[in-house]
Image (cartoon, rainbow, N blue to C red; front, side, top):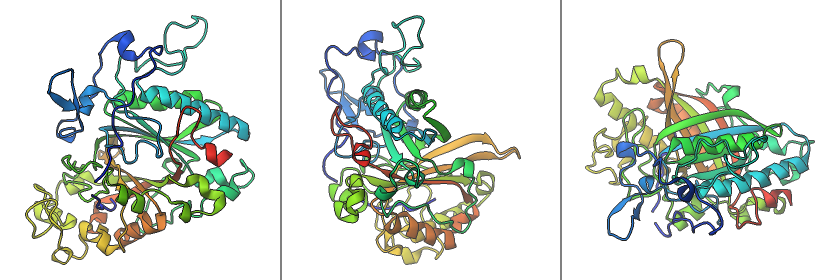
Length: 433
């Protein structure tokens, strides 16, 4: 479990998308309003509100099926308000043909534009030639956009010599993470040439999106590993209630705010001055760390409340730091035990390091020994790995009391390019120019 940094507010990057052209049939117009996005109880409460009809009643965006704009200076799914569900996939590129990879990224972009607007891929799942496979697999027919965002990243391995001629364009900051004390990483759940993060309020919408991209890429890319997540464990919108992780504690109290443009510029978006000229394609993008963190649920559940609160440095009910009354009261770090998680993860203990977190809980059956395979799928965006995740994780891996109850079992890092500006642009265009 890694840092829970801080941040304050400015413009809303999640305003509803403009309506699609009149000649583009939406799922709504063709099939009605069936299949509302799921709301996960308290985790969904307090979501972004949108006006329904002509009255003054408001409902969370999770219930309106609103679309998040796909085009912009930055990719959606980073500073955007965190949705309730996740399907994350890492891909290996199988082709050796650079033109084929470029063609795939163009096709992925066009498909993503449609899916995030609540439209089927290509000509859709029905109505085409009966003798040909449909362009869309159809499991999202009748479902709303559900605030679907799709975010793409490029792994260090994509820049290896003798692959696609990109070795000279690799940003200096895009490096494989070091092995931290306590890591027990599974190579089958780590790494990847490409990643796609699909977030939505309806799990079927998120799964459908990854399925379509994998289908489009068949033969060019193959899924290396994937992870489903539920119950967001951090929020990028400060007015929302802070979600709880599988250990029952509020998580991400001091997260960077997705509406604080100054904090985003300082901690999340890569600036042109951070990059050599050959790597300038990443300006306006970010670095993503993905870590699969297994929780020893059975051991934790038999630990006293007092010890649980000492481990985190916060009380379980309110989320207040030791000696404080409210969750957002400024913590007094020295009042906590020296190995308390909050004390070690706090920016003041890490030279001001701050991350934008988009974590999700997971439970993937059992481990074969009668224990839940459950925990946190940790996602964090930052401007600089060596001023963000790396120093924080070094500090935590060395002496965090939480290490008795968790283990990092999967890991990957990606360079996330800036946003797709318009319908003529595509994911990674500047990298391959």
